[in-house]
Image (cartoon, rainbow, N blue to C red):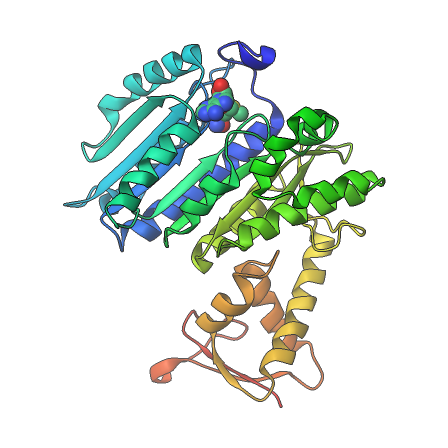
Length: 379
Ligand SMILES: C[S@@+](CC[C@H](N)C(=O)[O-])C[C@H]1O[C@@H](n2cnc3c(N)ncnc32)[C@H](O)[C@@H]1O
């Protein structure tokens, strides 16, 4: 059996953290898209056996449970709705286990949930899914593709590029930096895999970088840029253990500001629990902690400054701030916006927000910012 783990293995803490993020994100993704589209595609490209030794669910079962148990399930089961799950696993024994787990759960699922388990490689199956779409000149249904391999092979940039051509696609990739660094950078016979991973030889510059932190930063930035050059916006989330060693990165790439906001919320939600802390890559030298209140206030102040500089003298609707300034911000989520607005309105002298108005003359409660409010920034 590959990588010596056997068919199923003990769940490591960093996998629990990843599952928490996946669970939270899908809880947002399914209903957001199901309210607009009648077909959704969820692809788990490196699906695993569907369970762990302690009985914990694997990622395919997590996705099914989120969709099945969702409070907004009526959206996911409404007439004409087609929810398709591809679960792809290459190892025979793991695939068999996965099939069994899915079969156990199937009777509880609504009839419009279509499960397509595949015993093959991600590359083979996903290439064929995309080829069918491309040949017919059609568009892929809105898709979330989860790529969760042990190492850095099996998901070449050429394939990711074809996914990125599909307008409503997004991807969450587990990028095992440790494995890349220890097993691939040291072995010239494996360089061709890195060319495939990055879609070019841009990674080779890292061979000249002696400082380990700088090397890691270079390689991760290069991967993010490669994803962004395909038309997505991407954020890397660095997952570290208590010794501050990188366990892996999660790269999320999307064109949807709602998707990016939901993913950051998922990260913030998972951050205070478990053995892991999440670091951002804005300033690797300072290594801002992603989950500490101390830094939270700093992010709010930075956001407040940024908003004032961008909008002084203007009237702006709050949804525009969320879409343009919060969603694509590398760290901030909705609650940082509320705090930033309070800083500008109540804690700045003179106040940098001079008026907050609600449409159709509704009254406003002090210190609140309704979703449809209009904010006037001081000149
Ligand atoms: C990290 S595990 C997946 C864990 C699973 N996503 C979860 O969270 O429960 C990676 C899985 O990918 C499988 N695998 C390895 N190479 C593959 C490939 N090229 N295509 C599909 N599956 C592959 C391995 O057998 C392993 O079960």
